[in-house]
Length: 279
Length: 224
Image (tube, rainbow over all chains, first blue to last red; front, side):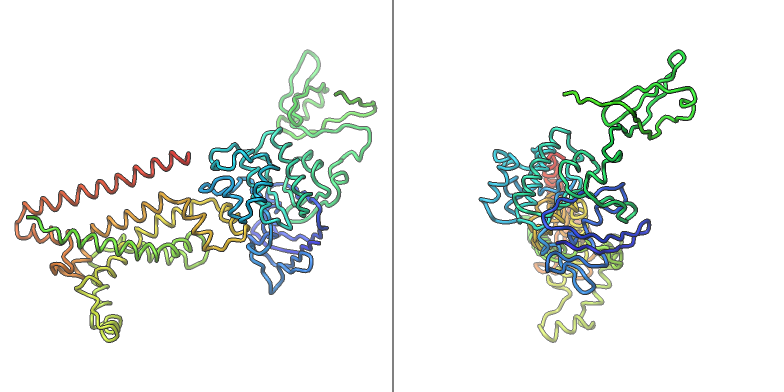
């Protein structure tokens, strides 16, 4: 059990979070930028100071007389920018954490980088670098794995691959994992709990299904998108809207066209029909 | 026949100064690069002072602080029987003050340019600040290390005002190359002044060129 009850004041926001996490769970931490997600996880790892209490199992990491140094917290941290050591090869990056050749070999096999073990980080692609960073984070067999937007710089096929590898490692090493992410599908696939922060406070906390399914499972579609353009075609108006990675055209009335502004966030929905799934 | 003793003395002085300053400046610049303490600007100002102060001002204060009449000078005379001015020891002390910024500033700049997440990754891997400094920070600022060492060495070889005030011009003891050239010009021995100056000029050129060439190839290699 991880018990977090911390507060930290900043000029713009005040971070106040109380959170209990079961061992072995996979928690997504979501929210707008500046909501305090990264700060919360940096406080958990001891990289930033804060007031309050952090307890992990029977061990106190933080209270008003204790501050356990990051070196002693047994945390695996994967940074968005990889943060590999450029002066060491892939294998040396892992062995720096712990001189355990067989564990390094095993981890490199899981992330499919065994043949790259003698390369230097600057000769790897972004996805490969992040897999090295992931393997390196597991070298200390951490109790807690923290992933700070690890996949946001990668393309979708590489994301999926890494998501799988993260899940394998999470289960194999029985870690409690925290993932900072904005990607709804990623959270849905990987996590069993979602915590949404806003201005330093938890505003939602539940399973991905409860938090993410906005239409509560009814037979309706509703997508958020951005209005790119309104085009007049003869007597009708067509709104061109970007939803995820698709562009769609929706016929709208003159009144609607006058109310809408380009760049606006809109919801596109439809009611009363039976959807089919095409494969 | 040219007397090379002043050159040997210059190099010996520069070597000893560089070694001492490297050892002293590593922890100092590592601290300055990582601290957010209020005293940081004051420490930075003190280390940068020798750049802006006239060598005569620095030399005067050092002379005042180290001479047999001062507390420090008196202490060393009474306890160790050594004088700190007008000898080689005095030159080393003076040079360490004079060349300090040329060692600290490149090192601090190098440490500050490092990816902070990379250092944090090392701490989270259970490594202390010292291990992180030796195994992660230093190997990744090789150009800064080289610049700091070479420029400190070269700058010490090139100093004149401070050594003249602290050391005078005692042959085989404090008469370094720059002081020797000054004296040659004073007695109108232009031939030897030319030779000495040409040697200084060409050596400085070669040293600086090798630093820049190394940095260029290093940057190419790590793909910056």
